[in-house]
Length: 140
Length: 117
Length: 247
Image 1 (cartoon, chains in turn cyan, red, blue):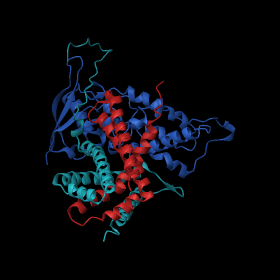
Image 2: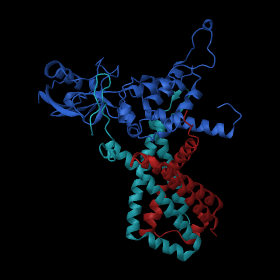
Image 3: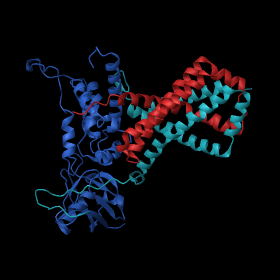
Image 4: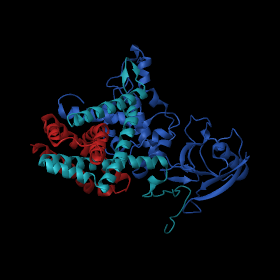
């Protein structure tokens, strides 16, 4: 602080601390929040990875095999393991927050939050099974 | 009197839709194509992949999903840059980079699903 | 079990110093004492110059919000024994300018509360002869949760968006707006939308959720904001796609 402005009883000098760049490290809830937000980077990585797969499939059998070999690379596997963690973290935090964001009234009563969250998780399971079936069926 | 944020509601809707898509389908797809197939279980045949991805419904779904996922990612990255790194004064640059990225990705996705045989 | 606990209290005397300092006080640590009891003991017995706000000492007036060991709390609802053996760090509520010691400047908050029109807005008032506006218990339940706010500002202290951008209208103001928007007697949601659809309105919020975590009355402002975002977004979309209809 440089020179002190004149203090009078009618103009008290308020103290306003600056927010540190590392504010989010201070509390566990803030750290979890930033982790959740950072998961979006791994969503973008997935789009890139998946589009590379689509491109490879489009180019032919050889390109497809080459893509699989590339994906088996230890560094790519590591990236995908980390991505999987973050994407699952995103899914769990998203579904857990759904009851707060979505209030449904049926016959005048509010549907309990747990039911909303449970139906979201249920949808997740059904969708995953459906996608897996589409991909795996016919690969025998 | 400040301006209403006219685009913000739409961007938020796209972000939310993208978030739902991300939560529902990425885990299973990343598990299969990122880990299971490259490392263990033999991947689906190229024929099958071509049939699945090349189906018109798949093409549209992939294109729309990728667009939504990119919007989700860009929106969150934008706000994380505001709040995490406190660079809100670089607003114009951030918006350009984030949503510009979405545009690039969307065009790429569109091209790739269109050119599938 | 210790019967004393150290309270490390932030002091700020603008007439003497540029920045806050800390002073330590040893107070009795009775089983039923809350942090506010400790503060009152300090003021009565140890150091009468300590300044802080409090009133009802039972979690309804919203006066005694402070930062206890880094977390926003009502000092009348926080037990000293939870922090044994101590020390307990006591600072003013975060994200507000500090006037003195533990007292913060709250004009910004008061202005935001009034700005969202926290009253029943009607297109046309019914004449008195027709009697009161009636409401069923179900209609009441739609907004009752958001009417529980005691204006303690803990949600503002917890909100990282408000910390970084004091122009953000904040959790309590939006929850209060929702209390009226969802009230069956109110017809003012369009007017409130004008203010809340600004960047510093609901769109600055990133659903951190801290506000709901610290709220002593379970108002769930984060939920109110997210619900409002959906409403506002759909209203925007409708007015964009169907401009001839009323918003």
